[in-house]
Length: 474
Image 1: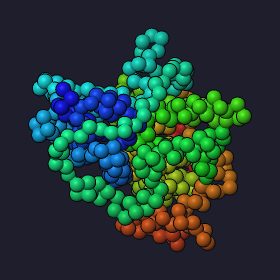
Image 2: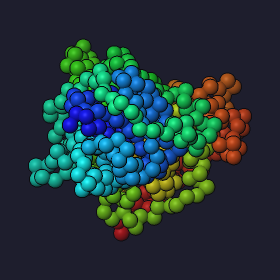
Image 3: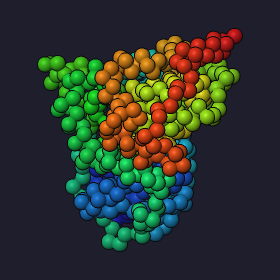
């Protein structure tokens, strides 16, 4: 059996440590053939996620070479490619780490059934989450629909220690042919923006671990309060690496727990809130597994008749960071330059689109999917519906964030807005100028132009939103 190759199907799990499927494959003594398939799911990624995937694959291929292995690249429908590899290599098994979004689950279900019917060993492993979605149940045996009870249900549970990275993988004498990563041109849709975003990306497992250790050593103590101020370097930045599986959630969890236990001098509160944020990601996956419609349909009942607006000139100004509301525009430009957006800023930008502009949350969801290098299907869907009011928010759906009030509270020194908005500054920082270097030339934007007037007054937008929400219940 150890001479029968095992295909390790790599997806969004580009790491060596804290990888249960890889750890078991290495300890099995079998010949292991790691393969990534640019399949029907990955082909549908937006421009920024697809570019970031390519960067992650390049780093992961080097990591595998460091333990005597390599990453085989193939393009095509997942089942067809895996069948072809089985025929070429004589493999008797295909293993992979589970994912939880509807498109990927449909693909995996189809692959597993077909491979098993053909007499192959097809196994899926945990590893993307701390807790499998079906393992967390309410007292009545259902799933959780509100975050706080979910957190209370899991915070005391044991989390397995992360597996150490394998020192070696047993390699076949002859490797199957592989595509060349550069031939895939995964960054093509990014155009000139790729050169800007690459300055802000932290690609690969080593950089992910550096991020974690730097955060726990220097910033976790103040995390509870400082995390809401987008002008401060107060967060971990690990969402990018978690998205692509360059760091495992168990590694982060146990690092946070150690900081919590050692935080008697003031760091415990920050560490606990950091763990809570990690569990928000779990909650999003939990909801998507149990209610996959959250990815494309209103999660709450009674929302299908809500008068969402479709695309418009106002929505386009939002996409371009030209709404005339500095906090909103700073958020949108940060995303275009870095591929990421501060969480507080995400809420403000999303609230402005869905409430002040009354635009369908799905338009915003699609733009984030196009632009974020830390795009996660579950977190993106839950976040947009949470803000729009159609999702799992326990607070009143008619809450409307005021961008000006939020800026006064969380960016009173203008550090965030000045970092990303060049207009009106005599010497704007490079971060603000980079937006104009990254955005499409067809937008015709330049840093010397006049900053735009607001699309709509905040008072008028708020009243219009509240009227729409009130009429929804009639």
